[in-house]
Image 1 (cartoon, rainbow, N blue to C red):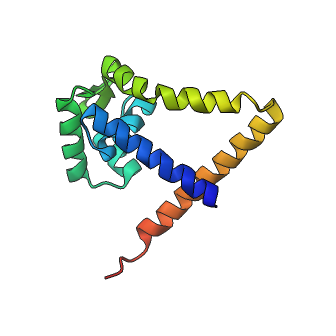
Image 2: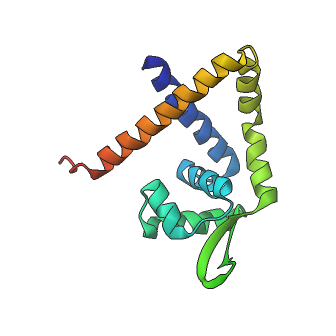
Image 3: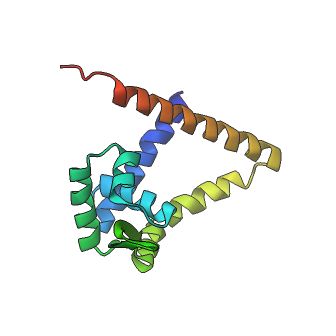
Length: 145
């Protein structure tokens, strides 16, 4: 658990520094990551995925659009539905900041054989599932005064 907590903390610190360098905040960066991985998202889906209110998501999207990272537009096949799409050139700029971390981790993982990599992948997948469950439980529990 200590190693997992340290990894989580280091990930937060890395994301915070990336966001600072991009001129956005860490919540905006996490939202940009979700939009980028999805290819496009509705504001409602983004709010649901992050647990952020739809009103606050509007602010996130305003900031990301002003910074040039996303564009709002109509969904293909349903012009009434709004979707958010990443701007590829801006996403490449953001991704470039993550390259040193990706390179360092990839280099360390190269020492493992396929069997060990499969085990690590399974463990990370299980940890991610556990984290999603814990987040849902925490989000649904009553707030303490």
